[in-house]
Length: 475
Image 1 (tube, rainbow, N blue to C red):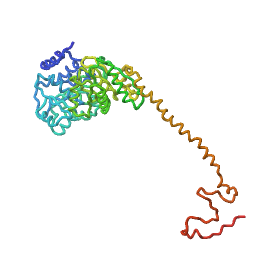
Image 2 (image 1 turned 90 degrees about the horizontal axis):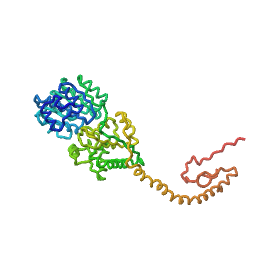
Image 3 (image 1 turned 30 degrees about the vertical axis):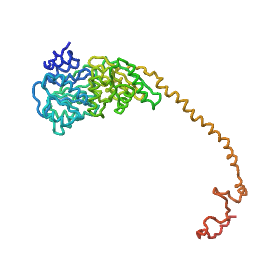
Image 4 (image 1 turned 90 degrees about the vertical axis):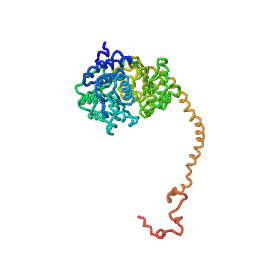
């Protein structure tokens, strides 16, 4: 069995790895570290939670041991799609580089530019950044990328989902052509493959698991849920979530609950807190300091339930997460792989449960097509009655209200024939039977032809008073 000592790492790095409690490298680490130490480009494909971060951090620290950083010119660059993942990489660097004098800087949003500029001005060996903040510093003239020797792109497929691919291409063009590139991802979309063909030079491809596979140590299940009424779906869906949590009992030590929308994250977290569950939200609209506090509380075990959007699906390395709940079925099938990868990490077992409403069944089909297996269907923990009870009394109650006024409306009906009997009153129309006079006009009263027009008084126009001779009737 391969040991870290067999991979050619620096003794100081090996000492830090041993202190961290690791003895045997994961398959992606055993496959990626040796070619990386040789200076070759590496394309690593592995499911999340398999140790990709150490696959590039350990060889990077070993290769940067010799040399000195210059002001505003980092020697290596690590790009991550989210602040949380970038912070996670920075923490790993601190652990593995503790016996060296290498320096680092973390460039993420939500932090003062001034503090970050001060670190860059001193010169850093490792620069860990999100693409947007990195380009902000570059455009302000505070950063040069011409000294980058090693460039790492982590979670490349998430970069694609978040629209960072144009930024990644630009950053590649700002770095030297002679750089070494380490490219890691859990899935490989066609656009990602195009970039690797463009910017990687004869890379060593390490694929320790089929792209978009889920860990065998993660038990999966989905509840096919249909609400009793459409307007009650949100409320009843939250009831199902709470029932699933209660059903797990003591086996559930902590959990991440994923929602598709940020607003839904807040609603679910508030609902759980209202019902006595220790929950807090984390998503991109929250202040960075609040996100950091929430994440730290979850890692330290002070917070039991973390309600998250997909911003937290990548880079959350909390080894002891026992459960993942997909409150919403992810609209992108690849996100399912990353979400459930938050549990069952470092060889532990985990459980991933999902709630699927009829509208999301098409997304469930896409997930099952991607992972090439059917997710087991679970029985609704509420077993139906809870969802149906509210509708039962409402059905008879609805007709009872209109039934009461029905007799009142029917009461005037006998009086209706009276006006019907009065209709045949043809008294004014009798003269019309003589044949010489036309029936009275629809206006009030009747007028014969020889009667003058009444109504204009003294103001009758003269032309109306002129006499005229009627034409002779044809014989």
